[in-house]
Length: 246
Ligand code: ZN
Image (cartoon, rainbow, N blue to C red; front, side, top):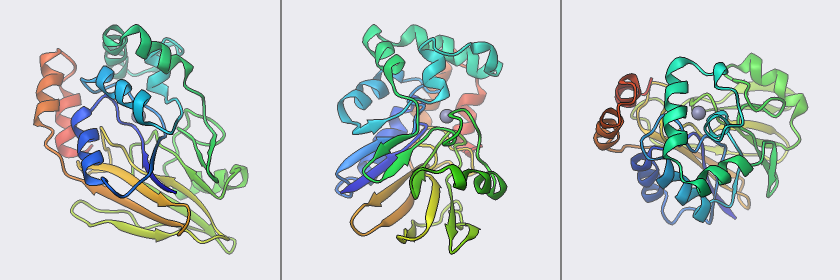
């Protein structure tokens, strides 16, 4: 089975459409590591798509915040303003869908999905040191996570921990062959708001038969998304960061 793995779409329909077009024909099922909404101007369009198309999905902290499951006191002022706006936009059915999303870890076909980490759905895993602490608690040899909006991967092979080389702006796809006897912690990156200095939408592909994992980026035109963020009166940095990927 060939999987398309996405995360942190954050209401960015243009980036999502670009990913689906870019990956067309290369997957059988789509799974998501959370944060369907928050930040972007099209929360309903993204949740409508998720309800119709996702094989498996877990909740992210923004999904919880917008659905009223999290005290927004914990959010920074910018995220909080967008969460309140998003909650007002969402249809009753879409709010209900977000409220019912399961927390990770979620088992899917031999791998797992988590939002932050297997231990804490709100934890930020950003370094090899963070990853080393998590490997002993992984319940599957392949775990996909999101939350940091940074496309990356770490491996434990023959008892050694290693950082997999990251894609740089302009780099083509990164192919990783996931071997049977290693363990991998993989962030497919953010579809809708990358923060690793590469404004291209990020995603991953995984084939359970060949064990091949591919980290990919695709360019998209964010001008409509940025214009709509401003038209709705959402904070300006949410628009400008889409240009820089920061
Ligand atoms: Zn996020």
